[in-house]
Amino acid sequence: MLEWLFSAGESNLWLFLGIMIVGLGTELIPAEVGLPLLGLYVSNGTVSWTVAVLVGFLGSLMGATVFYLLGRYAGRPILVRYGKWLLIKEKEIAQGERIVAKYGTWSALFGRFFPVVRSVVSIPCGLFGLSFKHYLLASSIGLFPVSFFYIWVGERFGVERAESMLKGLEQELWWILGGIVVVLGGYILYRRSKAKQKEQTQDAKTKQQNK
Image 1: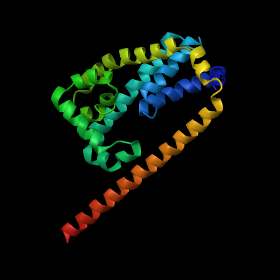
Image 2 (image 1 turned 60 degrees about the vertical axis):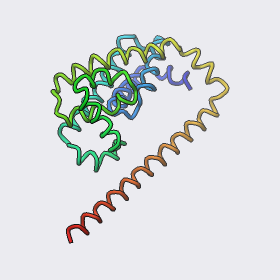
Image 3 (image 1 turned 90 degrees about the horizontal axis):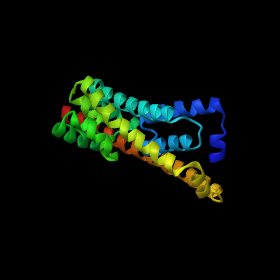
């Protein structure tokens, strides 16, 4: 699997780097997964440290910016109502609001060092109307060392070690990946179904109150 990945050619490499930026930017690819993978590319000599860190940092910063702007201009009611399409939970928004209310712009900096906090502070920073300039600066200061660290972990691990772990398990790995896709797809459908039921229940209550 990794042999195919790292011999994909220059055009596919740039496609991969583009996917990484978009994936990290939309948080569809967790930083804990995507950034070490970039590190494997560094250890293989496929990309330089500069390119890997730049891609990881820009992708992560794009994600932080997108979710800040969603909070700033979409507003809480819309995010609660339609956030399910972006896998955004109301509980996560509330959790982030408590953190941002307590620490302000500092949450955008130090929150980047903690996986759970990192994914919930961006939207509330927008909801609270924190200065975008200060938010962007704080996020950049926090995201750069985090991006570097995860890429370094992947680079230290190395392609050869990853190959040795996967050797002989490739067929099983495809079954595992297939299972993950099925479970994730089922989970997304379940959440959307529950969110729709909740929305219908709230609409029904609103109609009854208006009668």
